[in-house]
Image (cartoon, rainbow over all chains, first blue to last red; front, top):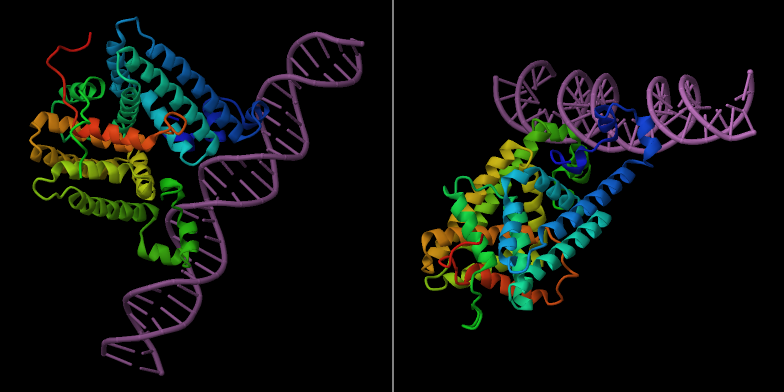
Length: 177
Length: 177
DNA sequence: CTTGTTCCATACGCTACCGTATGTCGGGAT
DNA sequence: ATCCCGACATACGGTAGCGTATGGAACAAG
């Protein structure tokens, strides 16, 4: 899944790797799609669990928790998890059922992250904007290849986290033309 | 490409759709990979062209141009282009040559966008952070499914554009714990 | 009129899959 | 001892796709 995406989940390949046979596979699953749906459901549950864990903050430490969320997702250490995340989202672009699951997960994620901003005293609409920016950023950055661009990636990521979490929003002075 | 990603580019299917035969295909291309590489090259050239077009601003109008870039990418009107972009990036996750092309395109894009920020008087490092945030955001948001989350998507996107382009960065008051 | 080149069509072999049909084997229930 | 059923394994048919081999029409050169 992480390495080849959903396309790499072949019945016969999986069976061979797991030292069972196709007969056994088709005993446990109706067909390939049945397996994929089970994986999807399992992924969803894992994500929902993770979300509440990552966004639960001690009162007063909500801002730190926001930084933690940004860090966890953009960290190279959870690369495998992000690969799976991207594989699922790629799948969701073409499959309605996968899209529905991703929509659910996104919704919960955004609400939980928004609650963190709200707890920091950020107004509702700004909290919505910031948490959307947060997740779009973490997913988007994992799609980019930017080694050549900036030598000090640590500073870059820290500054971006600041922009997402703490920059002073500026709207009053009228929009761009 | 847009609909099924690189996996949808099958030799026989393409030949049929284009009213030619496999024989003709293999006359013009060595093999399937040769076609894919040609597509990749073509994509790269198209992107590089587009980048300089989108980031060329009249002096004094750089900020407006930044908003324009954000708008162009996150607009639903260029959905097809974004689908292709995502397909290429998905490909790049598994293929070194595709990754190299994406790296080139990313590098040019980031530098061009950074120049816009620099022209607005933003300091170098902050400009780097903001343009990286910009592109990560536009790619990331196209992966998300957020209909249920916020009713006023127009305001949401406008506010996010403001955060990326004009928010006052805040670092002095010490980082989060 | 032959010969060669370009450009394309047809036909083939091969592999990787999917899903199904059928065989088999161990352990309760009777 | 027999029967049945759960939990596999094996074998098969069928499709989609890649790449190759070969055939052939059009056209130009000599």
